[in-house]
Image 1 (tube, rainbow, N blue to C red):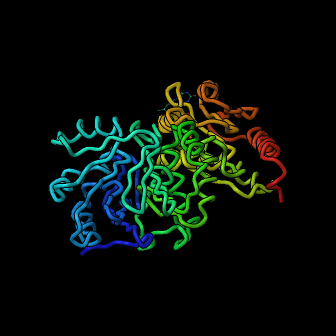
Image 2 (cartoon, rainbow, N blue to C red):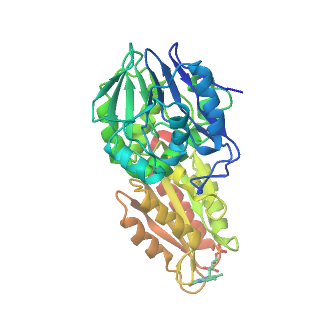
Image 3 (cartoon, rainbow, N blue to C red):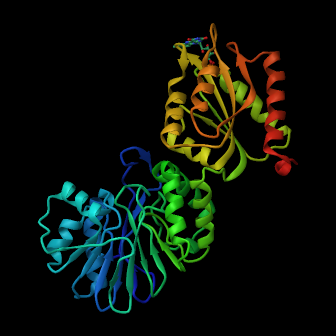
Length: 405
Ligand SMILES: Cc1cc2nc3c(=O)[nH]c(=O)nc-3n(C[C@H](O)[C@H](O)[C@H](O)COP(=O)(O)O)c2cc1C
């Protein structure tokens, strides 16, 4: 049975949800599932904006059929050629023999690479700022290269001021009936997944996100319609400001994330001691994560959120404990910048990871190491306690006065 939602008198949501997929991109855990959004505009001409993943093609086709109500489908706009948004194109071409595909040069290069379809006479190539009239509605195209992939463009509908934003402004998570951000408690239910989605999927491309936002900032936007997660029709500034901050690698909060590795509990013990000192010193926002039991995508999201990090690690065969090393490599791969980092190293005979982590972090832009680096020999000692007390004070003064009790 069709399952659709109405955006405006002319525009419907015809996407769907998948709560069975465990790993998005076979990489990122999505315990709350995922939504694939697609939007259908009815005017003199009909236009579908993007398609969905193959897991929900049947539901998707039923949704489109219902909204079209026996009308033909004239256009499919392809904003993004990643297979989770394109896997239904072949079926659509079969169902709707007069359907024309709208995309840019790179869109069609990728389409041919993925699907080997016969498309003679069925494509409409567009360039930056070209428009397509549907009758009273007009679609205008703006390229947003590397706001995830090189072919990405966004589509702006001029009559109703709708921005179809491709992967930008999206989120992990399956919609639970509510489609619009103002129908849900976004901060409580969605923000962690929206942040984790941004950080891990788009986070590497901050400067490209900035360029795209600059380009779009002159538009009157009444609704942001992304390819995953909630649609924004109120509080657009809220998500716009989050993106502005994230893409500049500015922390969202003055907060401390203590991220540690520990085999036998001694490094963990030091981290718990520091967390207690921080709380006693008046720091309100403290998060503690074991890097071995917290997925690296969540650790990355915490870096996007927090201004201050404490990395605590045992020496492992003369190197950084593997799960922490993996996290550091991910931070580098995703271009993370501009954080204040305190380091705690542990080792029973030759602790060397403090220097190794310092060298690694100095290779990232704008990472400030908060001195001194603390060395533990096997287990925290009385000296360690004093050093942790000092580190807590140093963190507090670096955090600034805003969060003192
Ligand atoms: C496989 C393995 C390799 C280790 N390699 C080193 C090393 O190269 N240098 C060192 O000083 N300690 C080394 N250690 C010791 C740990 O770093 C040390 O015992 C530390 O206190 C463990 O902290 P934890 O209790 O938080 O796991 C190694 C331990 C293990 C299990």
